[in-house]
Image (cartoon, rainbow, N blue to C red; front, side, top):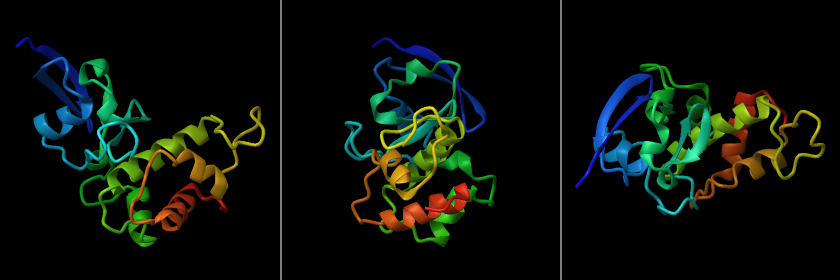
Length: 171
């Protein structure tokens, strides 16, 4: 079997790996780097449990080959906290009980962090009222932007509360 050399940053650390070129980013993280926070839910990009940040953009790691990210920076749920200090989004999820079983939570949190970056950059969503104006972070805007992340337990209202708090918005 042929392998390729992959160099990238994962949670701020340089990593060099020898991988089968068919290895997904999710499998690389979980099986080769023992970063098991990102979950394999549907393995089809439909649930969002595997969401990570690549160069600050949120992606479904199950749909992306690791080799596509040569030289890039990947941040997983494990890389958001700084030591024992939680990322503000992680702390807000705890405070607002934005989790129940917790399976989707790593993907929800990474997606929320990436989503706030999209809003800050002025990227519109399907429900953004005016495409040429800065998006307003309403509850409807948050729901639309987070719609790729499914929570079987139904903690959606608490997730919106957590995101709203971190964003400083009134949803």
